[in-house]
Length: 128
Length: 169
Image 1: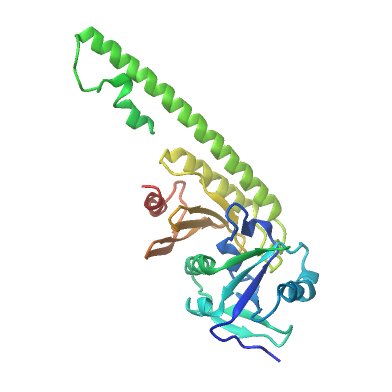
Image 2 (image 1 turned 90 degrees about the horizontal axis):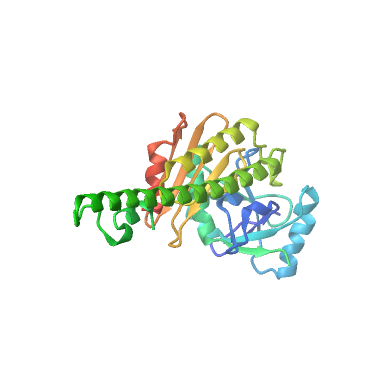
């Protein structure tokens, strides 16, 4: 059953590329939020109300098995912060709690700007 | 302190003072120029060391991101052309001799290489290059935001220099 996001939800963007994380000040780089060149979407999971263990379990179960790299961390962001940038949150049928950030521009420079705005609101959590 | 600022006040005499006998003034002026040349040489050496570090970082990014799906979400590989364009951009940045630091290198999922600057006040400026010589840029300067595209034609576009000077006036 697809899970829609309301304006108070928290979303997690799981990060598998170490250079998207700035260890000097524990922040995430804007490029972590840029859409995939395959489908122009950014994959996230709704994590509202979950424990830290459950949040990491989502990645371990549904995302990491399909990756060549190990999980490095995640960037949490509010669904309201995403929508305020003119983007959409579209739920998936599977896996549970999965959504895609869509509505990115055809103008790459606009997307760079949006991604910079998103990381200002994002909170980085490193893998424990 | 920049060489320019120091040059006006070398050894405590303004170069425009005209104080002292003509021969003494000439000696002081000669000494001032020698000091200025030494300072400029050391600044140039320092900057070259930093740009070498940036070039080394760029090479590592290229190595890490020249494969498919390097980010785990289907990212395009960085091509050799893009890497070479980025290398030339770093050389251009090094040659401007303007007072801003070397950037951080950021790969983008579309296969572009980006150059990122952030200051201590939350301002940020990024521009990226692809293998078609297209520069894409975006910046946040307080309440002011900017974004657009330019072509790379053998030199850094004025728009890029202007926005960097907004960060590092």
